[in-house]
Image (cartoon, rainbow, N blue to C red):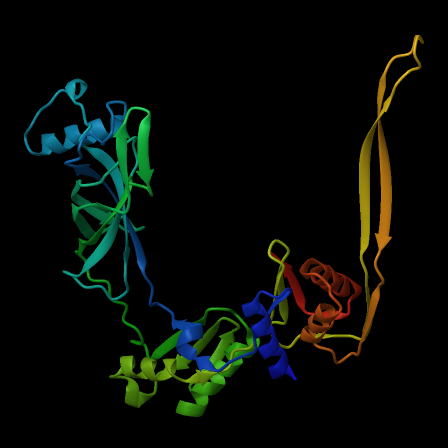
Amino acid sequence: MKKTLALLTAAACLMGITPQVAMADSAVTRIKDISKVQGVRSNQLMGYGLVVGLNGTGDSNKTTQSIQSIVNMLQAYGVTIDSSSLKPKNVAAVMVTATLPPFSREGDTIDITVSSMGDAKSVQGGTLLQTPLRAGNGEVYAVAQGAVSTGGFMAGNGNSNVQKNFPTVGTTPNGAIVEQTVEDDIGSDGHISLSLAHADFTTASRVAAAVNSQFGSIARASNPGRVDVSIPLYYRNNVVGFVASLENLPIMPDKVAKIVVSERTGTIIMGGEISVDACAITQGGLTIRVKQSTDVSQPAPFSYGSTMVTQDSDVEVEESPANSIILPATANVSDIVGALNAVGASPRDTISILQAIKASGALHAELELI
């Protein structure tokens, strides 16, 4: 029955039939897809620099940080200049950001993003000067430099301009060189921890059971979001191979009974393990039409009256026959939606009915509106 309903639902979504319902049952997946090894993480880097070589699209002389940065840079090279005479239209002050992947070593290259922080119109065609990139601890982990490539442009003059995307943000592939090796000594103490993407008591217990069934009693679920694993002695010199074996173990994650509805699009997405108590549903529609007409009152000839314009309203009420549905206690939400769809309930009627069933306490699932 569930398989047939799922196939009908998929066909209805493809043909544009409403309400749109998507069902999801728990599927077997890998531990790698629902967890990660604690300690294996990226690091965010950031730096301040200058982009030079712009074709008059850089910062104006009102951007004091650009002028001060140019003066400081030139002084470092033995050039003294009066800041009041400087016009930095070919230079832009920028912030440079990058993500340092785990296990990066000296000499590796990473991509960088260059973003204008002044009033530059575009950084297209510019070159980023050597910029140290620091982590949150203040240490320099990479140095960036290179030509900036933007995914947009700006053309025109005066009040007639054409702009595509954001030319004040650009990228430089492999634009930074790693200066410090970042290596986490995973498993050096003979233990690793798996961090679940979604904390759940049942899923954590199943992960520990899957590891123990393969390697013996080496795993323990410390809390709903973490599973501690002891590395077997024969894997102590091959931690990478052990983690690879763990990641490919099959697991069936558990999930909370939940329904997500969108009133804007009339879409209903439901997970598995959703049930309802016995209930009766009556669905009907009430249509009210209000019509307005304009009447003109003309006075009799040779009278002292005046012409009057009046508005008349005519109200019509039409109530369609109500449809009643009785569902047993074993009914699934897919049965409710299918029954309401059969009697012609609109997507928003279905959402309202689900909300009413939840309010009555008959729906045993979390209902979330987006």
